[in-house]
Length: 424
Image 1 (cartoon, rainbow, N blue to C red):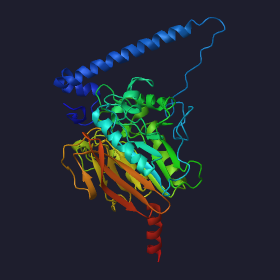
Image 2: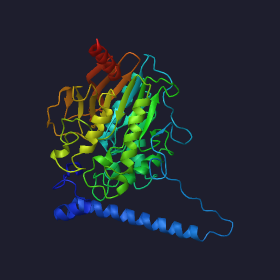
Image 3: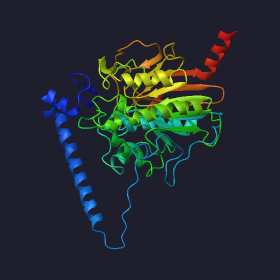
């Protein structure tokens, strides 16, 4: 069974309740993985205990410094803006390419380390060269199946650095459910594990994640940037299981702070184009469905994603031009509608895995594909925003331009125009 096919028997179980409710699951391949994860975590805890004991017996004159809180966690200020710490980072673009555009590679659900990921990255590398790409986006599920075990886990090398060698630009990364697994792979039930990916940003010239949620403006030094990205952590309000840590409850301090930050950041932004990036989509015609009814659930705070739906509708729709998401292993350009107040949903989660070829919903779409691997390229200038979608033939590692969507009027300007017409 593919971990992505795991669906709880009813909404809002804890992981322990789910395993008790489905003993066959606990004793099968998933149970094997749970036990393997538990063994790794026990070793990590023992290592921490040994380190603590060593610090307790430091010789006179020795100093033990407290480890600072990871960005976006308790004790730290969330919503950072700026390049993550560390020497040798690839800088955010300061000027457009030769065609007067800022060009951005978009990938999602890529972190398998297998041939499909390498093939998509190889095909994307060629397009990046021809299109003058200066920035990339990773839409979550960066390290399958359970996220990294530490901020120096070798899986960062095998599932990110090596496949993307040659795409030497900053990668704006967000957390996916597989990056925050608890007992069950892909559950999103242990958000704190995402701190390891924030910490890894100090070690990589590519990986850009200065916080669990953050903004990045392009050009970086401009007070009125062409485009600004608003990176979200959607896991605490879209996990497959109930969050047991009160800090990450759907209405807990973490999500209250993130919501307030997003609202304030969108209000303060002077960018012509605004792009929200988060792992879980608002609207989606693929297998996982849309926020508010994920995987067919219509009850529960978590499994159906009702509070993520509220966040998108109450804070994002009508204020951002695009929502970029992964999670569903498909490629979709959905149409902006009255429901979205002009905001367009893009789903790009086929950079290592693919869907089953079937649409499950009927949200209006200009183009969609449920069976091919692929990636997208976003092009922005003062006058237009274009999203190109490429499908990839894995055996030959070649990309084909399959569709392009272009708009010339930002959502915020459309709202001003509509208000003016209404007033007239």
